[in-house]
Image (cartoon, rainbow, N blue to C red; front, side):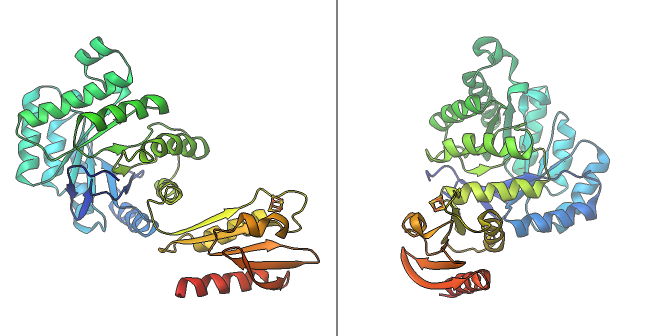
Length: 348
Ligand code: SF4
């Protein structure tokens, strides 16, 4: 990954070459205990940073309690009110996210910058297609260039107040627009980028849109922290983020390849592959696992696998590693034996 200016969000670095995973709490901010429990689950799932919406005084009070006990750094998401931004910083947020164009008078943005500087926390300038700077929109329209220019203008405003502890994001529900805007930002600035497709939709559609958008950027070494936003529970966003990063070798862990099956497959591969994927999801080291339908093509196709299994005739299965047969097992014990050998590999 390319190196950008490194921004610290409590103990997490953004821009150091390792892509971090973010999500946003979905419960009411005032439900402190429930949110704290969610944050623990999100951390265990692989999340690095959590964002929470702060819109009123009650939520500021809740934010303070959440920040005190949270096992992950908290980003306060502010929509319009500069007072909420200042109060959130004082309440212990490790970063705030604002769109300066929504804050109003520049003097209010200056007050936010002063407070963030006093507390040594960064600001994410988050610009969405729905909240472009009006002058920029008039000049460049609702385009990728307009989105990027709008974000750059906001960052320059912060810089004019001598504030440089900045992360940038430009989000759009159009994958193409988001990707183009991020590429422009990447060329124009050294600030790390938070990337993702906003309002991406339901889990199924949203994962695809984000994988295309975020994946296209990460393949070009663009992007430092990601959020896969989905109309689904936050933990689903974290799981999807991990899968995406693993598929690009940007996160260590087990990857399971499996064949689509055809008439040569004599067992329930779909269920088995899913079981293996779930059982190995939390493995922290690289392990390439293949679950194949038959030995005809399976062993060859799974040549790169550290360990693999392929269905054979007469209820037999072949377990192999790097394309070489390790042993033959039967339908009575293939699951147990395969898992035992996977565990052996992990111990190695
Ligand atoms: S590995 Fe075997 S079962 Fe799977 S798609 Fe290829 S030929 Fe068909």
